Every structure is written in C-alpha cells, then in structure tokens.
Image (cartoon, rainbow, N blue to C red; front, side, top):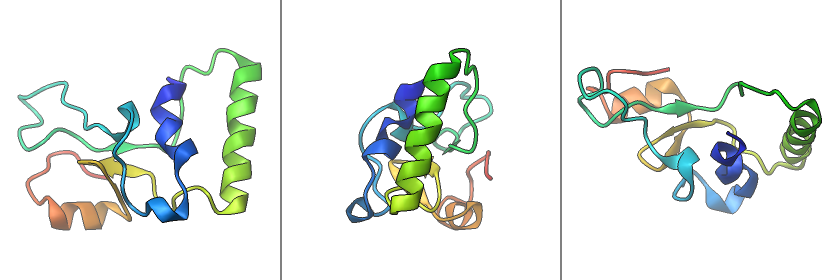
Length: 101
C-alpha cells in the first residue's frame, strides 16, 4: 500500500527519528501469541504487489529524488513511532521484542 510510505515521503532532516503520522508509523500487532511485547517493527526495504508499472515507476523515481536530495532517512526501521538506526539499537531499547532486524 503506497500510503504506508507517506511518512517517508514527508520526512525531512528536521523530522529526525520521529515517526508519528500515518499507517507506516504503527507497529504490527497481528498475533498476540507471537508478539507479546509491543508488536513487530516495520522495515521499509522492499515494496510488494507492484501491479501497476506506471505507478511503481513514479514511486521509485520519487524515492530516488528524495534520497539524492537528502530528504530520505538513513534507516527505515520503524517501531513505537520512531525510526531506529539499526536492529541492534532497537534490540538495546526493547530487549524483549520478539521480531528484530
């Protein structure tokens, strides 16, 4: 869903590691049996179900432009409304989290 990426499109260096708007900033809570300590982190490394080639090209071009201009975060690991620099940083802050990078 392209809406998951909206917070990344809106990101600027002034945003820092905050992620407070949109569905892309929420944790994954699908299964309390496996995710007992706050859900699972989201990682924006790939996008799937890109069935409209023209729309996909538009998104890829937009991402490339933002990366080149410095308006794309260095890491796209999201948990608890925050962008994390690495899986290790996330684990240090949330040692009981079941699903890590």
